[in-house]
Each structure stands twice: as structure tokens, then as C-alpha cells.
Length: 196
Image (cartoon, rainbow, N blue to C red; front, side):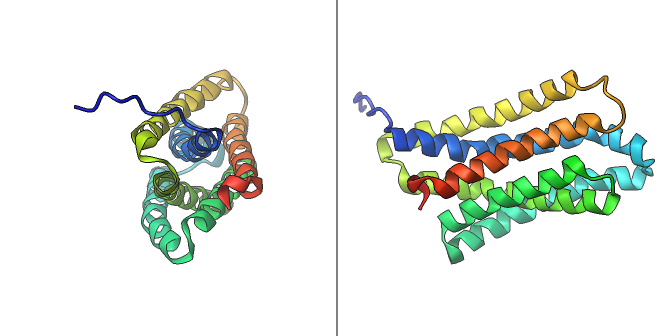
């Protein structure tokens, strides 16, 4: 049994875990926020049961397609390139969801946000695995689960705080916040020397 203590993570490694962990946060928050928003969209747009059911299905399929294609694209174009691109897709998709009053744009936003989120999760874990030393690898991967939990709790909390607002205004707060987090994360990924 090895009783050696793992060395502390460097500043760059901590930044990597935070930035990559945001992928888990975004994935969870998009899924939870969609569930919170679904009854609001159904009332606002007067969705039929078929359309209401297809919203979560479309998002789930987009996430699954993103997870499968994101890995293949990162192998072809490089993990960091896809890591930096897919978060921008999430930011744009969630911005469309937040500010649209159009059903077609809503589905486009869901498809973009779902694909980007699905692609970002495996790509971010691959980036961690390539750049983390073996002594801190398990700790780094495990910590991304905390971001998943934060995504669930924070989305429910924002939904609770905005529950009394009229129409789809709560949706604007839910997805607007996700979009803001994704744009900030994209900026860190693009402009930080750690992700070149």
C-alpha cells in the first residue's frame, strides 16, 4: 500500500480543473434548466403534448450526439481546439434559448446547447487526463463531479428565485446565466496560455 501524499496541484492545474469542470456544471444546468423551463414554455407557446415531449428528447439526443461526435472531432482536430470551440457553441445556443420568442429558434438553441454540452464533457475530461500528473489525476477527475452537483443545485435555486415572474422571464434568467458562464469560460480557454 502506497502511503505517499500526492503533491499539491499547481496554479495551472487548478485552473484546468475549474475550467474543465465547468463542462460538468453546464451539462447539468442545461438539463435541469430545461426541465424547469418546460412548463413555462408549454404555457407561453401553447405547446401540444407532442411538442412538449419533443423538447427534452431533442436536448437529450443533441447531448448524446455531441458526446459521440465531440470525441471523434477532438481526435481529428485536436482536443484543445474542440475544447475551445464546443464551449462557444454552448454559449451561443443558451443565449438563443434565453432570448428567443420563436419555437424554431428555441429548438435550434436546444440543439446547439445540447451538442456543445455533450461534446464538451468528454473533451474536457480528455484534456484533464492529458495535462494532469498521475499523482493528482484521480482528484482532478473526481472534482468535476462537484461541478455537476453545483449545476443541479444552482439551476433549481435560480428557478426558485424567479418562479413568481411572469411568462418566460425565468427562462431568460436560467439560460442567460448559463450563457454568461459559458462565454466567460470560453474567454478563459481562448486567452489563457494554459489552453494553447
